[in-house]
Structure formats: C-alpha cells, structure tokens
Amino acid sequence: MNINAIKIRLVLYAALIISAGGFLSYVSGSAAPLALLSAAAALAYFMFAGQIAKKREETAKNIGALGETIETLRADFDNLRGEKDKLGYILNNIGDGIFVADENKSIALINAAAREIFNVTPDIINKNINYLSNNKTLADAVVQCADSAKSAIFEIFISGGIYSVTVKRLPGAKLTMAALSDVTESRENAKRREEFFANASHELKTPLTAIKGFNELTALNNKAEGLNKYINGIERETGRMLSLIGDMLKLSELESARGLNPVPVSLARIADEAREATAVAAAEKSISFNIDGDAAIMAEPEHIYELVKNLIENAVRYNYQNGGVAVVITPARLVITDTGIGVSPDDQSRIFERFYRVEKSRSQKNGNGGTGLGLAIVKHICALYGWRLSLKSRPGAGTEITVEFGA
Image 1 (cartoon, one colour):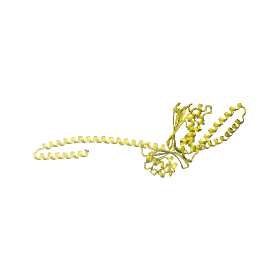
Image 2: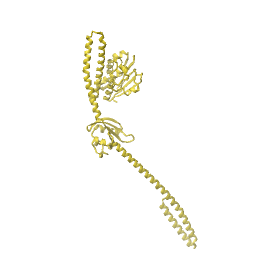
Image 3: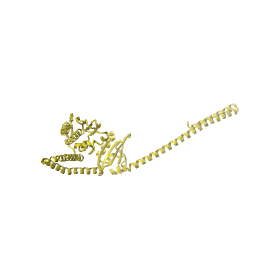
Image 4: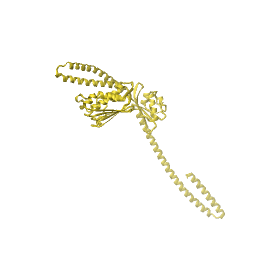
C-alpha cells in the first residue's frame, strides 16, 4: 500500500468517525459521544501516521539503494568504455590485419591495418564478407569457419603482397576472426636463398664430377701401391660431396615445385627398390628386412621413391649389428620401424631439419654418415602432398616413422 492510498483511507475514516459522532450527539442530546469519537479519530490518525512514516522511511531506503545501483552501473559502463577504447587502440596500432565476421558473414569489426590491406573504409562494418574482398579462398574459409567452426591457415596474394592468413572461430561466441600477416619479404628472401642453393649446387657438381673421373683414371693407371690410400680417400670424399650436392639439388627442386603430376604408385614395389639400393649396407650389418602390405598412392614416382629410400637408408645407417627393419603399408599410412640407436627426446624436435644428425660422431665414422638432408627431403615431400609425418623413438630401443596419406 502506497502513501497516497493511506492518506485517502485516513481521510475517509476520520470523516466517518466525525459523522457518526455528530449523529450520536444529536440523538442523545449530549456532546460526550462526539468527544469520544473525536478522540478515536485522533487515535486512528496517529496509528496511520506511523504507517505513513514507516512507508516514507522504506521509500527513502529504496531510493538510496536505487541511486547506489545507478552509480555502480555508471562506473561499470565507464570501465567498459575504457576497455573498449584500449582494445580499439591496440587493434588499430598492430601491424597485422584483423577482421571479425558474425554468424551472418557480415563484418563486425575491422582494424586499420586490415582496412589498408583491402583498401576499404570504416563503413564496411555490417556489410557482407564479399564486400571486403573478391578473393574466393579467403571468403570460402570465413564462410566455412562460420558454419562449421573449421579453422584454416593459408596464404593469399592480395594488394601486391603475400599474406599468411589464419581463420578461426572465437571461443564462446558466434564470431569468426581472420588475421593477416604480411610475409612478402620473407617469401622473397626464401626464394633468393633457394635460387642461390640451386645455382651453387650446380656449379659445385661439375668440377667434383671431373675430379672423380680423373681420380678413377689415376686408379686404373696407378702402379705405386703407396698411392692407393690417397686414391681411395679422394674417391670416398668426392663421392660424399656429390651425394650431398645431389641431395641439395633434390631439396631445391622440392622447394620450388609448383605443379604436381601424381600417378598411382605401388608402395610395396618402391619399398623393394629402396631395399635393393641399401642391400650392401644392410648386408654389412646383417640387417633383416620385412615388407608387409601394399597400397597404390597418388604421387610422382620420383618423390615417393626418395621418401621411402631416405627412410630406409636411415633405418639401416643407424641400426645395430643383426638388427631389423620393418615396413608396414596400408592405404592410409606407411610405417617404417627399426631396432637401432633411437632418438633422444631433445633431438626429436629437430630431426627433420637440414644437416641435423642425431649422433654426429657415429654418423661421420668411416665416412658412413649421410648428408644430413635425407629427413629434410622426406619432410618437404610430405608437405608438398599434405601428408602428416610423425616420429616415435626411445634411445637404444629403435625408431618408428609414420607417414599418413591424405592428412
């Protein structure tokens, strides 16, 4: 009951009491009833006046609490506005382009770097993603992520530059974010390194081939027994250098590969050819081979041969005497396991880097080590076809390398 209702009820009660008192005074011819009823009216007034005061006090408290709530909300809004201003400042002063699309594939947010990349104005907000760019790869990735939360990482050429793009769904929201990083300079530097790599390798191969040929002629015409160790040394070192240059050229070709011409290739046949290529080294250590299964993989034959051969060569090179190598083939994966020296956890993250060897002293012993490029070649072939490469190993307990096709 509010205060106005109490006041109205008080007036009505007082009027009723006074009227009743007047009537009784008239009937009885005495003023006593009127005095009595007037006292009752005064008592009623004071009773209702207490309720009025109590209601006023409650109303004052409620108004005070409401005021505090309003002040708290105002402070919260001010904090949110401040956080929004900070976020906007950060977004507009980072080098990467960032934009966010909502569930309707409309632009919800875009920073200054992204506006510059796409050459758009701030009024792009709330417009469809297709108004931002006509790049189909980018638009498809954003739409797919918005519909199915599938993230994507790819590169696009736009506005005269190369950009690495990451598209992902923001957690806890129906928003899709795309971040664009300018990688033009790094890609151009990588291209220059690849060209130098290839040119230097070609230039070195010619004189080394000539030296190897002259050394072979010297060996045929040599009559002095004391020269044999030098001739053999030249033969061994030129052979290692030519192997290294050959691997460098293969790696350069893989890095510069643009178009592929895959055909069905029998993995069992390739594994058997790679086993024959390593037969001499395997026989020296009495290493047993087992090839199980077969599958036709879509790839260029040279690529799949290089991949399998390098994996088997490593399995033999870093194996123990009387060890074993097992090759398991299914349509989904290729698994090559050896019983060799294994790879320590510290080395496993770097095993596929160029020129990295697990045990440099052992790999160099008697000139028996590889070029240090074999597993780098394997990694590049897998990257070229989108295959997944993984390694499991323990020191002294062997190594298992798995190539998953179509990953």
